[in-house]
Amino acid sequence: MVDVGGKVPTRRTATACSTVVLGPTAFQLLRDNQLAKGDALTVAQMAGIMASKQTSALIPLCHPLPLDHTSITFHLDELQSAVFITATCCTTGRTGVEMEALTAVSVAALTVYDMCKAVSHDIIITDVKLVSKTGGKRDFYRHSPPHSHE
Image (cartoon, rainbow, N blue to C red):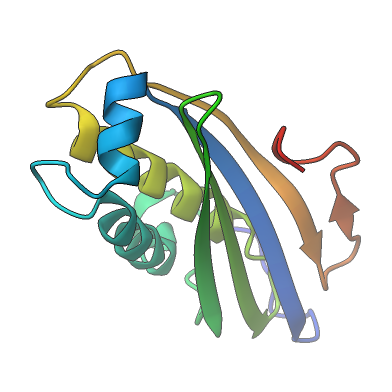
């Protein structure tokens, strides 16, 4: 692990996103909350939040961080039969929260897959990426929009 003991604690925020492309049938069932397993977006939201809190247990050499906040939002795009997932994590600490945000959107996307796989296995998880991070040595902002709907 990198030694962060000499760093001054600062407010740190990171946002990441991912996309889950479903077929039209799975998308319609998800949108209408008619999937056999239940409310996919609520379950995915909880899974992503829980995963963000477990990042250091999943990613070797990742510092355990006390998260101040994690939020996960979804945008449904009917034309693409896609779910766009965005996660933002915040902490006050000596190291950034980009891994927590990336873990949150990844596990949320995997959960959407799991909730929809009984309908179809033709599901694509794509475009997992960091959108922004602030509060550290250098801030980062992705110049292109994180989703095609923005």
